[in-house]
Amino acid sequence: MKTLFVTSEIAPWVKTGGLGDVAGALPQALRQAGCDLRVLAPRYPALQKAFPNAEHLAHLPSLGGQLPAADLYAAQHADGLPFLLLDCPQLFDRPGNPYLGPEGIDWLDNHLRFGLLSRVAARLAGDATPLDWRPDILHCHDWQTALAPYYLRFYEKGGAASVLTIHNLAFQGIFPPQVLDELGLLASDWHIDGVEYYSQLSFLKAGLRHADRLTTVSPTYAREIQTTAEGMGLSGLLRSRAAELTGILNGIDTTIWNPASDSHLAATYDREHLDAKRKNKAALQRQFGLPERSDCPLFAVVSRLTSQKGLDLVAAAGDLLAALPAQLVVLGNGDKTLEAAFRKLAERHPQHIAVTIGFDEALAHHIEAGADCFLMPSRFEPCGLNQMYSLAYGTPPLVRATGGLADTVIDADSGALGNGFVFSETTPAALMHTVRRAAEAWRDPKRWRQLQMAAMAGDYSWRVPAARYLDLYRTLQRQ
Image 1 (cartoon, rainbow, N blue to C red):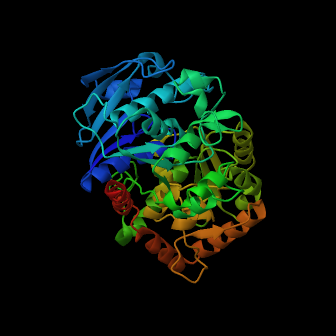
Image 2: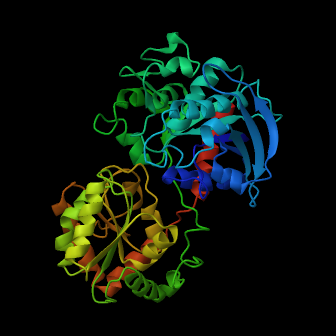
Image 3: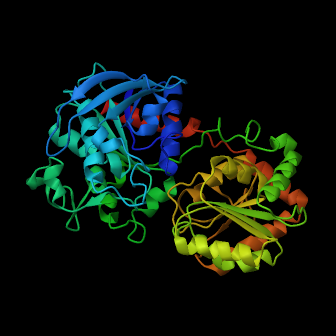
């Protein structure tokens, strides 16, 4: 089974969110399950630095429109994972993250940057590939590569079957209609069954219509996006393709997120040695400048500070949380109003609330291990990874029942073997009611230990998801 895995970011080198984490871990899990896989990604500065001895494979002339010529390089990670790096300095050799310049604004030519990535992916998956290796499956991810199934269907002969994974339907790759010519698309493709989306061009819509199979990153999210409320204007199209749409829950990289071997921690631990977790709580309190209290629960947030993540609910409930009494640590950045709200909370309650604006990978590990309970009150959450990190670290998550959160967290009061806390209404009062339930459970050491043991008993690795993707690939190969 040969698979070309196409992504705009890949951890640890280029990452803005869950897509980078998935692209960093799933390909290796697929290879370990027997898949002959290559990862195609732009040759960003971070990847140039990571693979300075990459081998030049082919020159790719312009493939239409204003898409520039490019070159293809081969590299291999120390763990054996092979990369195909798309080199086009005028598009990819830039500072900033993959999508934004240093000032935080979208690059104006993002349609060309990711149009080129999609177009090259389609060429490599078709009969005209310049490589000796041609995939059976073209696996694309999010809007940045969603034009690839379209190009493959209409511009390449032969070719692989295509899969498009939706990591977040809210990001759709929307551009003005004049970029149609720049991308080498025909005017005849400008219609409701092509790339047109409310008088704009949508990369994602093109992929949703023309990929052979669609997946999302959790079963619940696959159902949610077919509703008008959660479908972001694409629910009708998604319902029409329901037979080809599958929800496969993400996994996590358990070589990185494992409390028994995590080098970031003050003390490592496992299910049989949970008492060592207390050392991580004390270390985390010291790191955030909070009193080292063992008599109150420590809640935590690691997140983009946005309304999608429900962090406005946490900010609104912060005074009540501090008065329980409880402590709260926050790591993240995003909406400036929310950043200011959390700073003010910390100023009002310096003994109970501490905030770090920004992101720090090591600190994120400290928080997962040191917190008692992890907060994820998202309005929508395609999958979520932090709740699985928390479960693996014996830090029961408190979540809203949506997307992958609903698929992974079982409420402690549900009558089943709970591993966390779940609420439904998107209000500060509903969140605070659940925070109080969690604090009450924390004050019962026996009950809390049962929650921790249930959480840490789960398998959150990529083993099962990778097997499901391979089954999907085999189904396509037989067609």
